[in-house]
Length: 293
Image 1 (cartoon, helix red, strand yellow):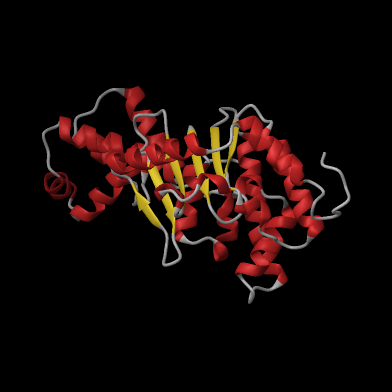
Image 2: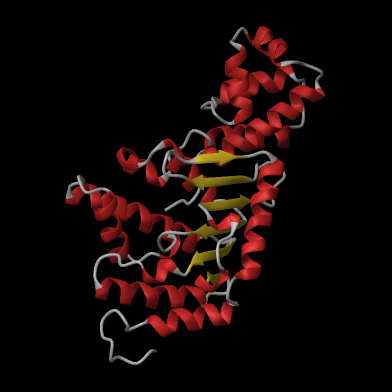
């Protein structure tokens, strides 16, 4: 299952096309006029929002007088990658535009910082926990629709596992996520065990924001910071809000949320203390008399 969708290749292609146009001393209007197309078409290609055709890319490269065959081959290849289907597009009926972008960035980011206030982060959820969570969030869904949501969640986790270049995953979870019942005792017990196992992975740093830390500005919403090593990828922040999700891509905004994450981290339990907190709760849902593992 290929982890990468079309968004990242489109963005990389667009960035390179913009640089080549500017190096050629042309404005968007100049390129559109020469190719006898709309300005919006050229703009959408440069912002990664358009579906690239290899012929259009070749025409633009010829216009910009690019004669480096390796560069031409690279851009044409990116155009082809930008047209392919992502694995999650088979589940398009439950994937919103926001979710499509979220998964695409999640599947390619070098570093991911999750700050979660309500439930266990999706990348660590068990199938049982995810199913009961979706059952509560989407009470009108059929069992078939619920299963598709679970498949999507598990697919995201599988794409992480299959990546050769493992991303660095840092997560801050409010202590309330460990206490909020999802499903039943068996579901919660299984989820806590899975969470403890995930916290021991070398590519994961998981910390608990304790009740004793009090309120914090950065602890008022769930957000994810996506950062990339490649100079052609735009760092982004996804903010989950009840009235609708928000995306931020301005460098100052990304830096602000990265700092919020770091500030929250200084108030969190240490990695070892966080593991101990999770471990102390294993078994408490299924049996009050069961000793902590």
